[in-house]
Image (cartoon, rainbow, N blue to C red; front, top):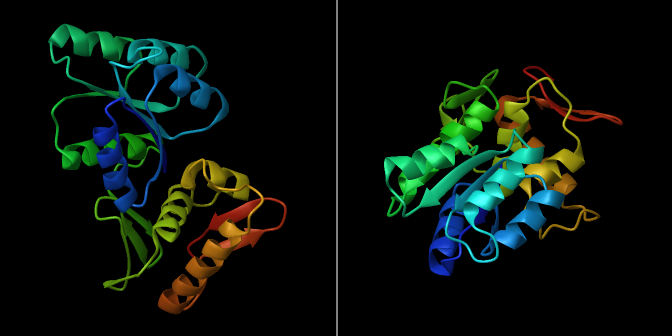
Length: 224
């Protein structure tokens, strides 16, 4: 999943980004509301963690502007404004959740998990594909009780494919949802990571659950 963190307190922004990257999310950061609007106009994100007190343009302006053209991207508001009226205003403006500062990073991760699973209408924290399971809370793939040793990118790719089982996912879509903005779209990075992931899955399952449909993309299926 690709997340944009918009927070002008750089130390907090860095702490959030590090915490989420450890969970194999792809994270972009910005510290200014105007910069956030520019990013949201040209980039795709699964979720935005949005502070309200921002320079350039405040968080409510960013939220309202986003909702004029995008009703799908999840937005989790972070704010020191803890009054009920503030929360109501944020939710009425289009936020999907509202977390008051100070907060624990574990709670932030849990709320992000709930929002991204809801994005894909998935009710269980465990995703399954045949004998393969992925625990979205532990960020761990398991086959036959044995945990797979995956890199962060392999973990992100596997989660996204399992969330979209049966549907072709193009390399461009994986770039949008699993990589951050630093990736070179012309690099061989996706194919390298997918090749490594498929090798590991083949070794654990005895078959490769990822099918490459020429001209369409990668499809996660129960049987090879």
